[in-house]
Image (cartoon, rainbow, N blue to C red; front, side):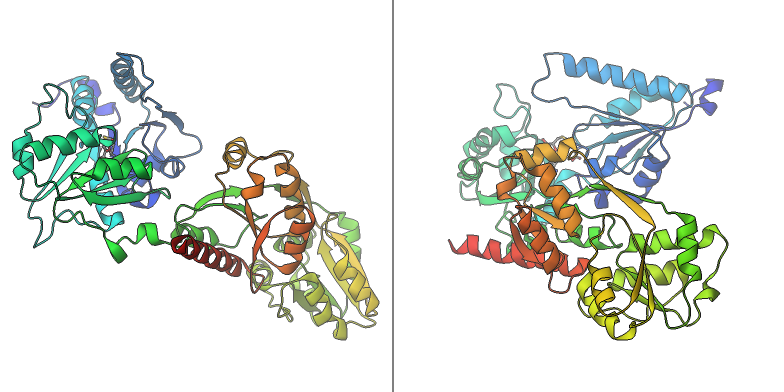
Length: 521
Ligand code: SAH
């Protein structure tokens, strides 16, 4: 019967949302919409940080870190406290999302939580999630069903496997006509395999373990029921993991696409002062575990009178040169500060150091660059502009920290260069703590660096890290590579065309040839 409590109607529904196995791309759209709107998010330990990052910045996020270290009984106490908290938050009118790894109802105690909430008069909705077995299957390339090899699939808890009264019908499982997927069994592989074999499973039945499915650390080990525990021990395979036993659990070859992505398992730090859209997605799709390091705080700042005077002095045939997107942004702000508009630039030529700077000029001011050099560096920009600016004025909106290369070369070419500062940059004084810890432990593989200034800043901030020697740097251009080497960084790849796309490609190529080299050894 429905609750007759008249206050129930005013209590917001608590959503038990399946967060999927790790990767935020595997969260349902319904789950994401609820997460974005939640006031309070109560998450299990297994929920991926990318999923949590989708919550509103104003939301209160409570994560649980329960693990093997829990004292006896603590987990139960925590569970009761968590349910009490959900009830209290909902009754206080807050929108609660309870995020559970995988699917809430598969070995997730979701039903117990739902029943407790309903008993307290709190409405509940469950949003399904991609459970670990399904993710592990799809991303490892090992199917759960197959017309020839598996006409059924079952999910089994391995939590108590091998204990005296484990409640598992091993004879039924040994005879099961399909794929058995064991959850919570990483520490009990030997016991699970032995029990199945003791109850009649042929020891050479294919078996596979997929560890950390749907993360950049996913690994799959394939073998036979009799050997899988040893194989996983030899591979030092960590949990969480699922064990698959049955005819389909053979090496997936080319079907194992997730682990075959060029940057799978590669930790990449992106060191830039703002990347074009799409770069992060390209790296992520290639499998990289990404750290976006903002090592420079950037803000627009100028002497308006100086800026206005420099603009007033420009006439037909003069030029404005941009060496960064920030230069375009700062110029834009300076221009509209006094309600000037782009008609003033009739006959003025615009030059940009590269395509993304040109794109931001087009998007922000609707002006097409007249000139973009074939190679994207200040030297090449100067070389391309030089023949056109003898005796002309060139306005260069930049920041105080920029090297004077452009101005020097153009002055040599006979131009009257006006350098105006339209933005400022201040380097960070330390690396973010979580990144520093990862670097110290030698767990960062690549740093992608987009400017000489950033190369120097990063080199300075990382110089005492024991993990720095093993870190490979990919530089966006030869100039940045030189700056990196001079600062003591190990520059191992350079973009062929000085663009972010080129930089991503250079790292993918280097990682692929490195992996090939490792296979041949
Ligand atoms: N509700 C979850 C399961 C919770 S039980 C779900 O539907 O997936 C915890 C067990 O799930 C782990 O011991 C492990 O067996 C499995 N698991 C969870 N996340 C996993 C992952 N990313 N890769 C492999 N196994 C995972």
